[in-house]
Image 1 (cartoon, one colour):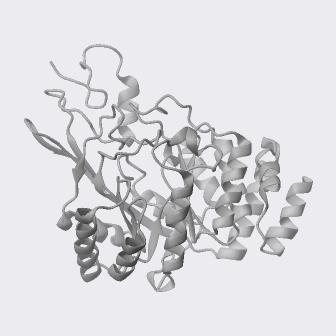
Image 2 (tube, helix red, strand yellow):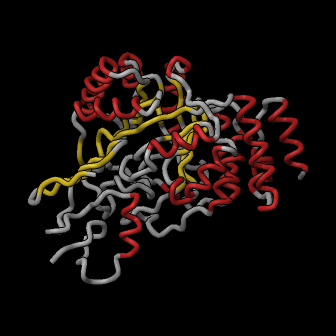
Image 3 (cartoon, helix red, strand yellow):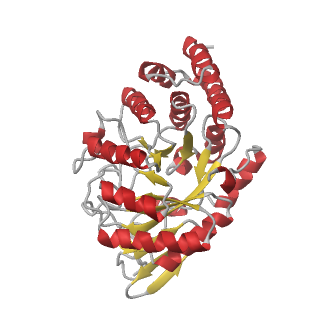
Length: 331
Length: 59
């Protein structure tokens, strides 16, 4: 076994202390011949520090498209020639989406809006929507509405939103190559306010934006410093009309190496499969990731693209003898 | 004339095999009858796509 994995076994598996940036980089540079033992170690770490359960979540877009920001990977930016049009979801459809998500056994339902930050109209929709969901469906409500003011953070807490997603997307040194309309530090500031409010912090990003392997390690270390409750891992699904529309898809083995490395950096976090896994990993890779550090999934469709049917993921979890986390365990 | 519901180009012009493959994991974006961009709503279990002229398609 390579020295870095021996070190990780003692430091992360036995001691529960995540790897630092230089160590993460060593893991990301391991050859394909060491991938099976890396994935096994990451799985052992996940099982020891998180348990066997898998957290299942559904997401929905409350407000799609027309975003004023220029995140180069995003088909919802109004600044690119993307075919995605602006559209709002009505409250009955939002509640129905939550109901269908809960029917899969999911404990989390995240409401997402393509905005820089919420305006009064969006906050009013959230207030009405979260109330309607909480009255009709047994599920935890999360939100992802961009950058927040402290007043908006407090409002979301009052509504009963228990987790807030705001991805850093990539490492600090690469962020200006991906987004120019706001800064990495602005995102960090929102995350700090969310943590101070008592809401759970959900923060991850997208791999395959053109970052180097060193920057991938930097990103994992910066997320570990933030210490989020949940880290969603997306893999770029190049969208037509965006500046990254012709970017190559992350190679499957690199994606698995990254999953394992992120797990070794953050042994206790909820590490969630998010967008892009279908094209990056396929069915076999999805299984490998669940046995290599992942302990949460988004089931069903994403915001503008489609995912595997929830039934397929749930069948895979049953086959792997990984129980779905119960709602009672999240309260 | 009909149009590719992914890229919006004429269906009879060019090769749309890649569009067809991509559509397995994407909802339609253009009306196949008139090429208008549709209003598309994706939810966890499906999608609807509405053309102001030709109505709504759903998964």
